[in-house]
Amino acid sequence: MAIEFAQSPLLTFVVGLALVVLLLVVLDLPAFVGLAIAAFAVGLVNAAFVPDFALADAATRTASAFGDGMAGIGIPILMAAIIGKSMLESGSAQRIVRSFQSLVGKGNSDIALWGSSTVLAIPVFFDSVFYLMAPLARSMRARMGDNYALYLVVVGAGAATAHVFVPPTPGPLAVASRVGADIGTTMLIGVTVAVPSATMGGLVYGRWINRRVDIPLRDAMGTTTEELQERAQRDVSSLPSFLEATAPIVIAVALVGSLTVVNALEGVTVAEPFQPLVSFVVDNRPFVAFIGDKNVALTVAALAAAYTYYRWSDLSRSDWEDELTEALKSGGNIAAITAMGGAFGALLAASGIGSYLANGLEGFGIPLLVTAWLIAAIVRIAQGSATAAMLTAAGIMAPLTGQLPVHTAYLVMVIGAGGNICSWYNDSGFWLVKEIGGLTQMETLKTWTALTTIISVTGLVVVLIVSSILPLA
Image: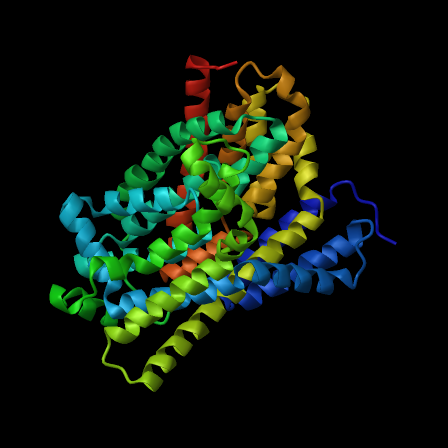
C-alpha cells in the first residue's frame, strides 16, 4: 500500500534533482546511464508515495516512457545524423554558409542563421529544425574560426520561440484550442511576441555570451573537426550547387509543411478556377499526412543528402556506406540519451508534481496572465516537457478566461513563455542540443538553458506591455 505523504511530489522532484546532479555532474557518469538510474530511483519514490503506482512500475514505466520517446524521435534523429554527416562531408553545408555570407555580409552570419531557423520552425517541429540547422552552425564555425556559441544560440532562439509562440506549431495550437483563442489572432500576436523574444535571447544574449565563452568545435554527428575545417577551405568549384545543397532542407520543410497547408485548405472556398485543385489536394489528405509525417519527410531528405554526399565525394560505394553507418551509430547514441532524458521527465510527472505545484499557486491574488506564466514555468522546470507544461497550464486557466481583461491569445502567449523556461537535465531537448552541438553539460547550461529562460522572461514582459497597449478585448 502506498504511504500517504502530502509533500510526496515535491520530495520526488528534490530526489530527482539531487540524483541527476550527483550522477551526471559529480560522478560524471555517461548521460544515458545516469539518467536511467535517476529515472528508476524517481520511480521507486513514486512507488512509496503515489497511489496506484506499484513497485514494478518503477521499471516498466521507465522502459515505456523511454520507448515512447524513441518512437517520437528515433527515426528523425537517425535520419538527421545522415543528413548532418552528408551535408557536412559533401560540402553542402559550406555552400549554404557561403551563400548566407554573400547575401547578408560576413559580419551578419548570426542574423542569417537566426532568421532561417525562425522561419523553418513555424511549419516544422523544434527538434527537426535543430537537426537541419546544427550542421550549418558547425560549418559556419569551421569557416569563421570562432563564434560557435553565438551560432548555436541564434539557431536555438529562432527554433524555440516559434515552437512555443506561433501556431501552427503544435504546442501553441493546442493551447489556443483549449482556451478558445482565435487562431488567426494568435498567429499575429505570436509573431509579435516571438520576434523580440528571439532577438533578445538569440542576438543580444548570443553576442553577450559569445564574448565570454569560447566553445571549441568538437567531433559530433560522425564528423571530426579536421574534416570540417578542411571543407571550410575548399574552393567553391568543388562544392555542390546551392540548389543541390539546400535540397535536404527544402524537401523536409516542404513535406512537413504540406500537411499544414492541407489542414488550412479544408473547408476553404476559393475562386472557381482553383476549386478543383483545392478539392483534389484535400481529398488526398491521407497521402499528404503520410509524406508530411516527420519520420517520412526526414527519411526522404536523408536520401537526398546521402546521394549528394556520394556524388561529391571520392569514396567507393562500400566506404560511403561505412561512413553512413558511422553516422547512424552517432545518431543512435543521441537518440538514446534524448529518449532517456524524456523518460526521466515522465517519471517526475507521474508523481503529480505538475498539478501539485499548479494548485499551490491558486489563491495568491496574482494577475491572471502572470499566474498562467508561473504555472507553466514551474511545471516545466519540475517535469521537463514544454508541451506538457503548456497543456497543464491551459487546462487550469481555461475556466478562468472569462475573467481576462485582454484577448485570450495573450493567455496562449504567456503559457507558451512559461513552458519554455529553463530547459535542463529533465528535458530531452537539453540533451539533443548538447549531443548534436558537441557541447559539455556546463556549456549547454550557459547557452541553451540560459537562452530558454531569457526567451521565457522576455516573452512575458512583451505580452504584458503589448496587452496593456492593445488589449483587443
